Image 1 (cartoon, protein in one colour):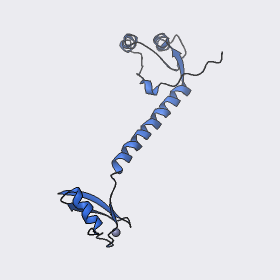
Image 2: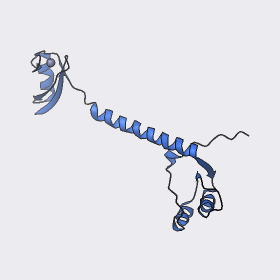
Image 3: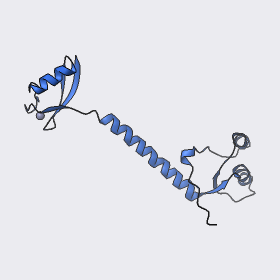
Image 4: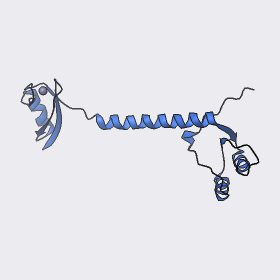
Length: 136
Ligand SMILES: [Zn+2]
């Protein structure tokens, strides 16, 4: 036996049990399946869209969050590129004005910063702001 979620032309959802998918086809052609709510024989298999829709929605939400983070980093932090480790250290020790920065550091540099107690956080590539175009 297989269970299908069915929907009538008036939008009533209900379940139907069939011995096979061809049994469903036969019964539907002979108009033997009718809606328990309104009695119409115009029924269709309900498309299993919600799961897909939910996944798509969360992917969109995730992309929006990523965009917001990227924008926030881009607006509030200075891109120091490959000098990240030096700059982060200089800010930490008060040699440079305190500000938000982002840039590149090797794993070794990052580890060194963490060991010195410099507050840094890894930023996945997906969250890195796109480099600002240089005017020259
Ligand atoms: Zn109905």
